[in-house]
Image: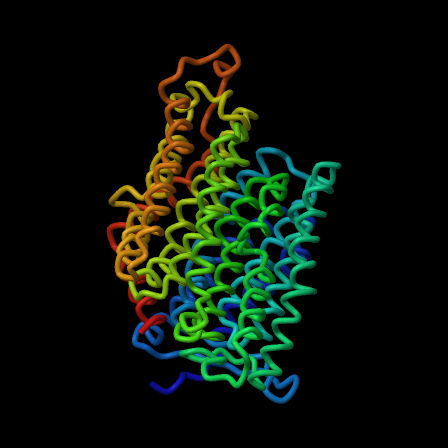
Length: 487
């Protein structure tokens, strides 16, 4: 099918960018300012899904803007992999925008205009990265996302915020300015282009296996947002940010941009055949399996709820990479589907953590005894999202983990099936005690303080919990897009 030439990929990015400008312009008119983000989010989602019929049918929607150097353009293209990321980001921005308004108003947070403007710009960068047609355009949006989320991490402007945001920026910018830049230069030297190619830009390239291996690992660690150990420490440190930012970092944009970039490299820069021939798949699988298990063990030891969720994210992100590098069709599909499954579930969990904090000021799990009886919607949603993270049907997490497990068997890699099963047991070990504490442990004097649900905070988290279940029951959209990537 010939590509459809359209401005819609650019419009999807522009909507969020214009929203950020409108938010700055309406600084003194708070009600109008707060209305901008939900309206822009709905508009962005409508533009993104308008391209879905073309992409689901096997086509692409493209727009080339201008040439920078021979073989290097700034260009946009909506294809199957990009649509997975763009659909998730644009849809979850709608609920995140509503949640953020309730959260920021209830806590009377300062610098709300800056917060909402940076939030909107980060969504523009995420969707721009999703629709990038080549490595050059992708890295531009990747860097913009790093820079514009820095003020969000540093939002509270205290010493803890400074330390967390500094680590955040050092890890992400340090990796991209060193090994990632080297990978781009070497790729251009080898292939004379940075375009994404079905089957792999570097497939059949006239380069030594050693050089290609070096380039591959430069990408894997250069895209530090993927949080593969040891490039993971920035992620727990960034938990100093307000909870809506944590949701943005862990579910909507930042970490998803990292694993999305790694998948682009595997599928459209190196190609499945080249990754297999060089033995990079199995090597990466062992590396990310270590990340999956160790991050889960770290999560078990954390009493701070957001810290536990942060280490859970480190673990769950590596599921996505593991699926891709197992190189079997079912495993690759599972990795792609897990982008959406993890996003719907993890944003719910972070929304719940924020709801608990707004209502009670509590952060530690050990202080939440009996709170589920006072916050039934919040803790009910937390329980549903936990089941999805564990992989219990009929939730979204079950669908992606089923594909990953079947893909491990298909690839003949039973060791990685054991990793997936062990990780699911660990998921249960660090998620279910939270619900048990909230619903079944006796209340303490502190937990008997007046606590109530906050509507603008509770409604979005219930909506995302429902999305986790709906995707488990009706996974067709993301399964079809995953099939479009690997076939």
